[in-house]
Image (cartoon, rainbow, N blue to C red; front, side, top):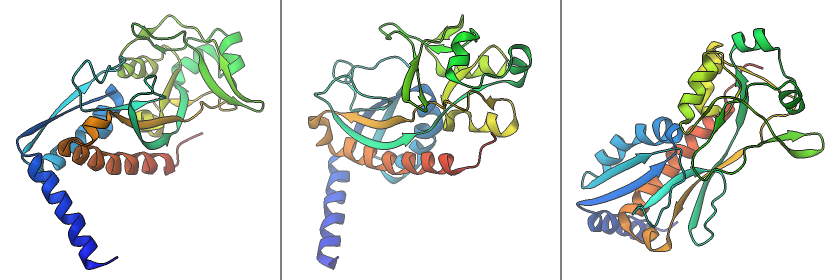
Length: 240
């Protein structure tokens, strides 16, 4: 790499930062992602780019990027709007888990079939417009959908985690959201013969927003740090 190319890259970044002065970057993220992976890095970003203001909106509900005036949105899953641009961050490992007290009362399910036939209390993330709820699990025959059921539903993923820790049911979670609970034994993996399929984490934006210097700077900054945090969590040894 030539010195001139390096200087040119720095020049572009400097101009982007200059254009972004006194700008507001509006971003959305699911609650768990925002609290654990995005928000902790915002002060570092602002320290590096003090003229850029950050407005972070956290919600587990479906976000409409264009009508809600957002610059970008971090999300888990697959986008429904094919007109938006996507920047993949990582594939996120997930786990089915429950409290030891729940397992003592209801037994240890070994597979997704056990969740259905045993009528286990499955804690569901629901919000207006959500599709019929099924858990996609990895079996010897490939990915299968299991129509789980339960009496507990919420549009807040952290509420589901709290219910699981309290012994009220089984929850499906990205490992980064429950890794501390798994390590201290508050939650233990269940149905380990049919683990959940990994879920994509990505950043969603419009082509026009991508050209905005403040959006580009914030996205690149977070993609690097969030991706690193997910990889570190996935490589950590969790109890089985």
